Amino acid sequence: MAVLEELRITGLGVIEDTTLPLTGGMNVITGETGAGKTMVVTGLGLLFGGRADAGRVRAQPGRAVVEGRLRLTGRTAASVHARVVDAGGEPDEDGAVLLSRTVTVEGRSRAHLGGRSMPVAMLGEVGEQVVAVHGQSDQLRLLRPAEQRAALDRFAGPEHEKLLDELREAYTRWRRVVDDLADRRRNARERHQEADLLRLGLDEITRVDPQPGEDDELKAEAQRLEHAEGLRTAAQTAHQCVAGGAEPTDEVPDANSLLGVARRALEAQAGTDPALADLAARIEEAATLVGDVSAELSAYLAALDADPARLQTIYERRAALRTLTRKYADDVDGVVAWAERARTRLADLDTSDEVLDELDRERQRLAAEVAELAAGLSASRREAATRFAEQVTVELAGLAMPHARIEVAVLPRTAGRNEPTLSVDGAEVGIGPDGADEVELRLLAHPGAPALPLQRGASGGELSRVMLAIEVVFAGSGGPPTLVFDEVDAGVGGQAAVEIGRRLARLARSHQVLVVTHLPQVAAFADRHLVVAKDTGGAVTTSGVRVVEDTERARELARMLAGLPDSDLGIAHAEELLAVAARERRP
Image 1 (cartoon, rainbow, N blue to C red):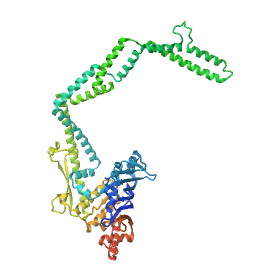
Image 2: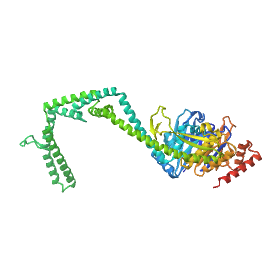
Image 3: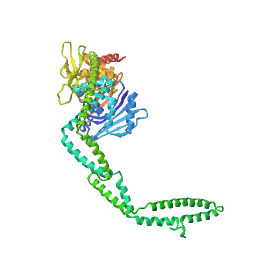
Image 4: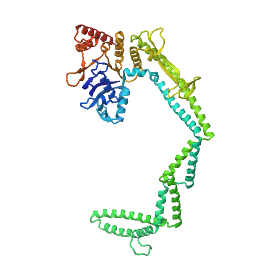
């Protein structure tokens, strides 16, 4: 469960600075036309990563700021907290998460989450998990066939979504093989030409057979051979200084002997001063190191080669490597990498009959897999469509549409619409990454009426109720814990308005519900009633939000009922409406 406990909006549209204290049940936002109710929904959209419109930012102070505090529990809390921490943010000690969004009048946008600056997309990620906003634009979106199919897929459940993911993966592999096969056949001549050039290069590289790091090794060896005499003289001089004369009969003292004399002299007096014993031990360590250096110098002199033939071989080998680096890469390692890429590319360019036959067999295998998955997905959609239609129809009966019925038609996608086709369940159909179905929501407004698509069969008020019924059904299947309804009751009145209020109140038992409404029948069911009031007393029009209770609330409902907040009759009517709603809200 997630609850947006508080929302603060500054500098957005007519709202100068206001704070909305929200509760976990049903929150209703009302106010006169133009007071700024829509800015509350706009602020929510900004807070959860929506697109920023600099035109809505007030000139003073030149930036709009929206801040919110989310209280999270359960699986939603674990998921959101983990994402916030991964991104570098930190929830408060009490588990709340702070969000903020700033938009300047120049259009620059900044976001903060959990006390850290974040990309705006991070707010969107959190928003997808915790809030769903429904307004007139959402109703229009639901009229699109692709959205209707997506809605049915969401309702169908996790096993259905897993099957849909499998189909998408198989479809991607199938289309990749189809495109590869078509390209090999269509561009066979160009592929042959490219393959010939690659083979020429590979043949040249294979003859030389460069090894990784070889050029650097040859360069170092050539340097040693070119300066062999100087290196020998230096090594011999150092060896004589360390190990004594070149011949055993030479009387030149060696370093080890001198160190031995020094060590013994110190040890002779070590009993008088212990500090000399420490120095004697260090001299012994130095003698060991000098002995090692002497042995290594002997080995170096023995291995030092001044063979002119070997130097010539190195020159020729380096010349061959330079020929490759001029053509294929900056260094020998790059030439080796080019050869590896060329071998891989040659395999891709292969247009032999064997390769084409193998690809064609793979294409057929994947096509059969896609067709089988699409058939399974269609069956799953038909089963979900029956359940979905039944549940939405039940909700419509409770929304003062007792004779209306919803049908969900799952139809084969028509072939020949610039998309691939496959045989699914014995019929040739068009197919895409989401399967081989078209989904259409149809409304039977009353018995005997034809089943018409929503966009043709539903009036504005009916469409609002269908949308709310669908949302109620979705709520029973999970989904975001906070639901926002922006005047989805437009075009509705009378008993239907009361039923909408009842349904929203029922939703509020398991979700946090925020409703922007102009209907007193809906507002009466609120657990918390917020009024957006416009102040035109100064030079600039501003709006603020306040919580209304008791008498104030009855006055607001009276204003909504008849435009007469001070009418005794209107207030009496409002109090009666509140009493009815209070009884209805009881479990």
